[in-house]
Image (tube, rainbow over all chains, first blue to last red):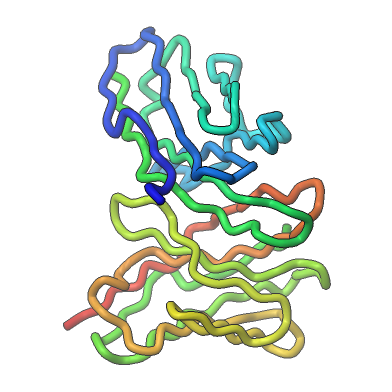
Length: 116
Length: 113
């Protein structure tokens, strides 16, 4: 298995531009998570989906951030317009949840975003 | 989810056992203890989890005290590749809030030759 795949791995953009981060979860997994990591705030959960439905988006910082999961094998996290304070590493993770079992989350390599 | 307390940093000699403590004095009866680690520039990696019994897998052992207020992650023979930030997380499994992993600052383990 290729694991969780994220693209791009690195992104440099200018303030005000739209940024789209992409994630392909592990095949067969039914939950997907987006995290953000900064030196100041550590690792924070932004949003997670279960069976393609957003369950908890309370971590999404503001309306400039949006996430979609159109099917079980793809998700996007979009920032529009981007700001320098959005610079961070964004991780996608997936898991297979059935009742009480199988909630181990597998993380992708991350996308390093720099907004100038 | 219960709050956890971990030392900021620890050192360990290569080949020796690394014992990483975690306090979770407000843990509830239905909350599990999870350990993840993050090697520099990589995504977090699951290590092990447990409820009240000690657990062991190919990566580590987890020792949970009888009152469940603290636990210790043991890496039996630490290698340089085990240098990472180790996160102790407590959470309920199978609840409506089941997805959330709340990461603290973790313990930075430095394995030295």
